[in-house]
Image (cartoon, rainbow, N blue to C red):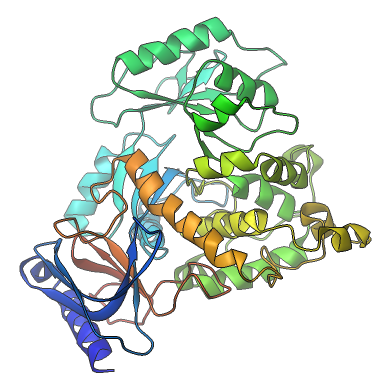
Length: 457
């Protein structure tokens, strides 16, 4: 209890005067931190932070009910300028949007399909907004060639130029139009050109089978969006690409068909993320089904394909798709992680479920009746293993892909980017959310507890 009071006092002082935290020590006693080498939590340790870095990690005595420390998470694809209700993010909304990522433990995010973020970075510094560390991909290229107007956030065709102010990621949107295929020769040539210039070509497939196969056949090493049914992968292909499924986008499109279940899910998301509950829980009300706005292929087909291609599960990259309709900062990650937990679970009592008669929307999605993204698991032992893998993807895999300065790890000499949890996220049924507090560069930037105006929010 004394240790908890010490941590609370230290964090409270940092919230009152955030700038002084970089010149003072933050000491946390008898906590358990994530060990990326073992993909599990350490024993009890004392952690000291000074000047925004972790300066020591030393063995400590055991205490009941310790706090758990996770490295800052990384998100490989968000759109800050979209407000998740079908419009654009206003300047007044930006502080809560940025805080939304911190509220779910994200220290680094990558913007894709946003205009130039330089003005936002200047405004963040000027207004002293708390937010994650931002990076921005090159302007996405649409292929096949489509007409775009002046000042558009996309570039037409594969003739785009590199912006030295953005990072090395070069997205190519393989959006099939009018049943036109793609020139594999041109795609291969463009990928090679991108790589020879020190950049990394990414393929956004829009869950299209032709796009997936063309991207794989031409050697793209990073793919986004769900894998369509019938995509047959060679063993070498399974080893040689990172995959961000972004299931939440299609999942929520289908979820909109059932407003009652949507409402129940809103309650679930709000419990896991107080920031979402405060600002966005009631901001989007699903409408009745509109056949033109939903994919013709049910989400269950993509879920089945994912479960079928088990070898790809070790290739996962995390991207929440925040900014798409219904996917808000923080909450979008909760949706994606819970889907991963559901789909990665061992297929317990499969024969029993096959004998059950599907009776509603959820049966068609997951093959059994459930009213939440993740039902109470029957396979209790598999979930901690699954969550360990998910945490590794959220931290080490995706953070290294983004080039995050902490590499998704907690280490002596490394930046102090981490979230603080009061429960072991490997054991609780709510998964790895919610967090209690977020520290970025040694500074308290978010806490779920009520605070006075002018402190961390």
